[in-house]
Each structure stands twice: as C-alpha cells, then as structure tokens.
Length: 240
Image (cartoon, rainbow, N blue to C red; front, side, top):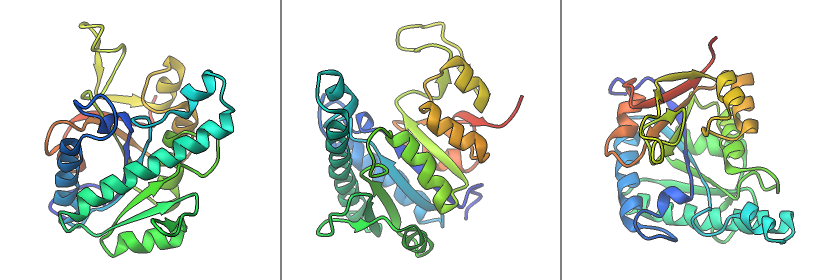
C-alpha cells in the first residue's frame, strides 16, 4: 500500500468545494483535480468512499429559513447531492476508476440503493463508492451522513476536504492572526464550536473513536500525503 497508514477512508466533500471559480454549480477543473488525487491512492490499494454535499446547487437550510417547509427543502438538497455524485462519478470513470453511486433515496435508473454490505463489497473490489442523498432523512446534514457511513463501512478515518489547510481558532480569511491547530480533541471542537463538522457528526466520531483529518483539497497530492501520515492539516481525535 505504498506506506499509507489507512486502508479504508471516507472522503467528505462539501458541495461548495466543487464550485471553484465558477461562482455556482460545478467547476470541471475541481472535479478533474479530485479525480486525479483519488485515482492515485486507489491505484495503490486504498479503499475510498465519498460523501458529497449539495450546497453548490441547493441548500435546504437556507431555503427553510426563507419560509419553505424544512423537510421539503432538505429533500431538494438531497437531490442536489445526487447531481454532484453523478458528476464526480463521471470524472473518476474518465480516468478508468471503477465507481458506484449509492443513493439513500431510491432512484434505480441512475444509482444503486444504499445497502451496507454491498457498499463494503464494492470497496473490497477496488471500486470507489459515492454515497448520495444524505441519510435519506430530513434534518440530517451530509456531515452527519459522512460520520454515519464511515462507521457503517468500518472506515479508518474521515478525510474532510476544505479550502483551507486545517482548523483555525478563527476564520483565517478575515483574521490574519488566526492560529492553526495541528491536533484537536473532539471535546474541544464541541466546546469551542469550531467549524469542523456539525455537533452530531463530531459526537458520533467521538463516541466511536473515529479520527477526522481536515485538509486543503486544492493542493495536489494532499490526499496521498495525509494518508501517508504527513501533517497536511489538522487531525481531530481523542485526547485531553
């Protein structure tokens, strides 16, 4: 496995991460860069599953705050994640990376239904599995989906792809003096309200001792470097 420390990982992508310079929707250059990085590690024996958000197309919470029924808005957000999953699948398969999209909401024409044992079997066969449509339930974010699916498939860690190089004590874009953390315990993330993942996701990871690596997805090769044990971002795990 070329020195990789983790055999099976879940990669969490926000929908906003796919926008790039486009301002809205999906930037093909971002997809190509992600596909290249994923291809490099899958080709060396790492099993990868992906949870992708839908905020680049539709945000259920934002629509609900404008008066739309929350459950209805969340279902629409789930459909946006399916669109992103299909786009990512296409980018990967153009690199001849075998891929399966599994949706929590059945839509058999374009995706397989989510079945835990089938997902694990796909990964054992070297296929990248993309989990779409969240948990299939309103009121749950794709952060929570990522934690849940990671635990269900027995992932060794969650890799949270962001636009910055880790977790800071303030937004580094607006606070030049913000301090970056190399490592954080789960409880400090919760107590300080740090923007890693939502509190439900962090609590799930904490209760099951599942580490989270937060890294910058824009730097080519960062996925491989993080899996090799290099400090390319912030790791959240147990500790005092």
